[in-house]
Every structure is written in structure tokens, then in C-alpha cells.
Length: 110
Image (cartoon, rainbow, N blue to C red; front, side, top):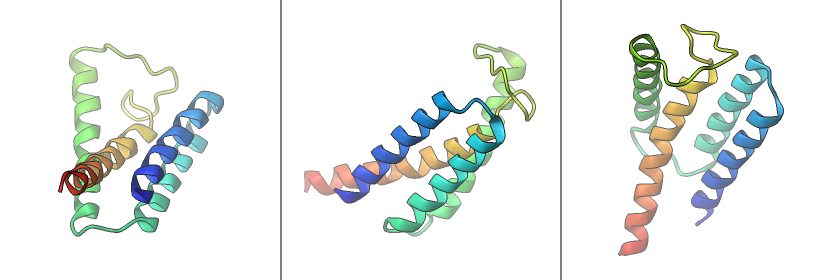
């Protein structure tokens, strides 16, 4: 239960900061710091670091490639090939969190 609360609270903090801070670099540093904090404070499942890196790289490829093909979103402060710096970090974080939430749900169902 604590893992689930940690996941939800960290996502809420990120979105509140995203709305209030309009600068790219502080937002990126906050995203990275939150990711490191959550991954270090909760139970580290084997392979999560690899999963984070896969999510980061896949998110970067998806955002850049689809941005070149069809731009449905416009980032005013995009810094890296039209993608904000923090977005691939959040993709990696999302991969890990989806894995953890899935494990929590499976544990609740048992």
C-alpha cells in the first residue's frame, strides 16, 4: 500500500510542479530527482533499472519519430529534437510504475 501511495503522490507532485514552473531545466531536474527518490525508497525489483532505460529510450524514439511524422502535440519549450528533456525520463518512470502497479494489483488479487 505504501508503494501505491508513493507512486500516486509523486505523480501528483510532478504535475503540480509542471503547471507552476515553466522553465525546462528545473522541471527536468525535478523529474529526475523524483524518479531516483521513488526508485530508491521503494522495493527495488530485479530488472527495474533495465526497464527504466528501455522506457527512456523507447519514449525518446517514439516522441521524436512520431513528432517528425505527425505533430499532434506542440511543446512550446521543447529542447531536444522538439521534445522536452523531462519527457523521456517520465516515459522510463512510467514503465517502472506500470510494472509496480501491476505487481500490486496481482498481490491484491491473491
